[in-house]
Amino acid sequence: MAMAAETRSTDEEAFPQKFVVLRRSPAPALQSVVTDICGYRETAGGHYRQVEYAPLAVPLVINFEAPFAIALGRTPDEHDRYDSFAAGLYAGPVLIDSFGHCCCLQVNFTLAGARSFFRMPLSELTDRMVPLDDVLGPDGHALREMLGNEPDWGRRFDLIEAFIIRRLAAAPRQGPQVAWAVEQVLESGGQARIGAIASELDWSRKHLADRFRDATGMAPKTLARMVRFNRALELSRRGDDNWAGIAADCGYADQAHLAREFRDFAGTTPSTLSA
Image 1: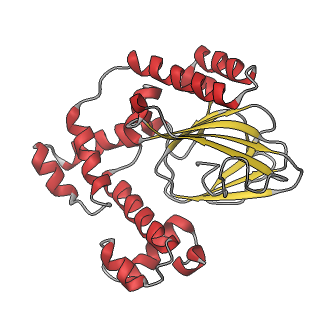
Image 2: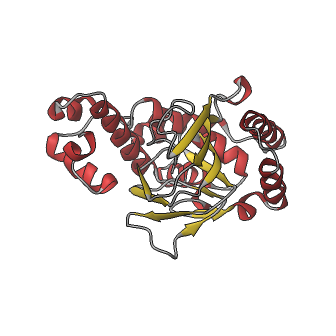
């Protein structure tokens, strides 16, 4: 649910009459934990819709003004308003509406980074937007106040990085086996054989699945499918419309298999998303 990810967002120069997006790459100490940090501010009224398709990052959104309307797999309505929150993985399209008065800071965590930062099984965030105070406790309220009282975006980025580093320093260590297993799925583009991973660790498939749900919020096969879909989507957005070739590169049985996965994860056809 990386709300800034679908905008054209080169620091304050893209559509300045409508919204501004500022981005920062994570500090070296956070590069395995955070993919990016962004600030988003709308500067004109209107209805803006962004769609994320089975995103692999785990966002933390600190909201300073009007809430977003967010729904999983459907159009949001007036009951789907979310202020500051964290969200886990969702194996489908996430629809995000705003109306010209939103302003937020968003941290996009890696799966390993999210598990350490939030200090809870990521299954507790799966398919959900969870309020800030429920995931960070009293620290969440203090963080929101601190960032909201700071008008400078550069300083806000400094403060959130320092907060993350402090929180990670006190986080329990996660076992290396499950981290290795998740990395096999990610680095292989979702093509690693789940049975082979379990065998390498001398784990049962059930134990592997339990550990994956704790570490990522998803079963191994579902995560692999999401990774494979995201790779296919990325290739298509580079201008490659050879769908049979993309299907083969990403490990799908054929082009029809790829099309079925796009319907599952995006609710539409491959050609529609790449248009």
